[in-house]
Length: 304
Image 1 (cartoon, rainbow, N blue to C red):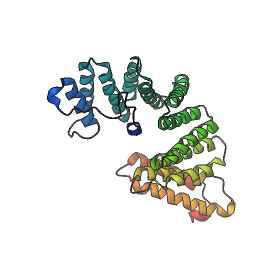
Image 2 (tube, rainbow, N blue to C red):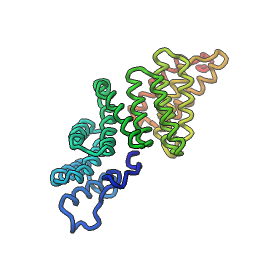
Image 3 (cartoon, helix red, strand yellow):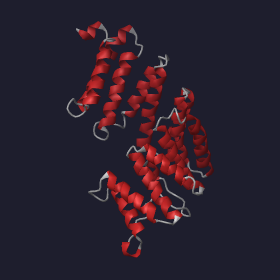
Image 4 (cartoon, one colour):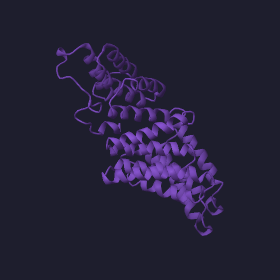
């Protein structure tokens, strides 16, 4: 959805801005299906199921013979499929669109979607394809002076680097993206980078690099400066679940073990305040299991 906020060149088609017709009577059945699909997709047309939205998009694509217009439809349809988690369908659609001889900017948008989809669908299997794809994304975004999409692509590059256990490279990519978001005062995206860095450093810590536990916790605490109970209750709870585990695992001086263990318990309880047994039984059970394992590592004074 962040891609929809990026302005497009006036001389190019603008898939970020749905071409909703003002007078349906003057347009073909294609526009009726296309516009209805967009309105339903973005929550402006009530009562349409996931299946109905797919049917509308597919009908519009089938009806239209104008390549430029069908590119609009395919871009938004692939976004819909990605949002819905239908990654294999999205990949097939995007690969077909990339054979159409698109302009560099539209190619960039579809390639970003393609990389995002591959990373969500057995990424290790797609690693040989992902590496040149990410390189192409970064090159295209720089050629088009699109700093926003370069920053977004750098986050994908960080995921690819992490798949190869290249944690330093991944951190470098995330930092470059963060620097751009900070200059533009994009607070949600800045906070998301802190969250991503926290996850990356935690993975690094689990490879035997114990000092990364403390750095991971610091990044998650930074993320909590934005993600709170009011604006992002699920993310807030997820962060506290991770902090509960980190505080239990991180090396701590003997005189501070009780204090850090107390922080761990507090974080676990914050997570359980949201992930209740009745509303989120799977997440509740996972947190309880992690909390049980953490209690084995707490000092005896905390168990009395």
